Image 1 (cartoon, each protein chain N blue to C red):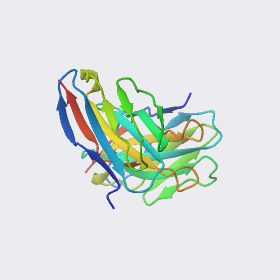
Image 2: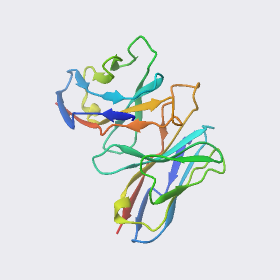
Image 3: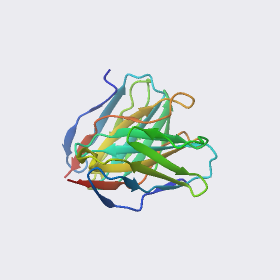
Image 4: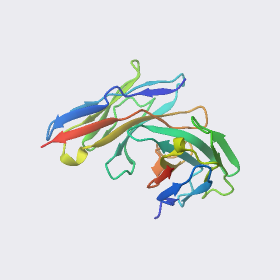
Length: 115
Length: 115
């Protein structure tokens, strides 16, 4: 069965510090994509970063990086130099190559950035 | 570029009423999806489509129907609304495999309340 697990319902981080949001996944597919999305209090869904299962390098996008450990089936999001605007819900998602390319989501982690 | 457009943004239904959530995209994406997000939770896949004329069930299809007569449009039909269908509904689209990363492009969401 395909599954995404985010074990941190809420996280606090001091402004300008780095924070890691945890994500583990379960799939029997060899080929899959991993994604992180941000949902601010306004409600829209914003794509942040992508990691392919065959990518050897960890993905980076500006202040976001994805710590991909394939053997452990983890895809943690690292946000460096946190800003107040980073306060939001963060969702880890997976798109297996089988089953019609459905993207499934974890339950999310709410990040609070303190000034 | 409009992207993914959902209507209505807000709707209140009485128990037993029916309605259709409209979704259209102008990016020529083959794949389209409907998700629901209950308060404080992640996104659950209701239905998805990999192209015109092809639809399939997601994780929580009961009480809903979809159709895909064109590439652009993917309406979601709620029959006999129930309080359990109170949620925020997101329509999303993506490129098919082999193009881009497969990230989802989301509409702004439709907040539905069933009383």
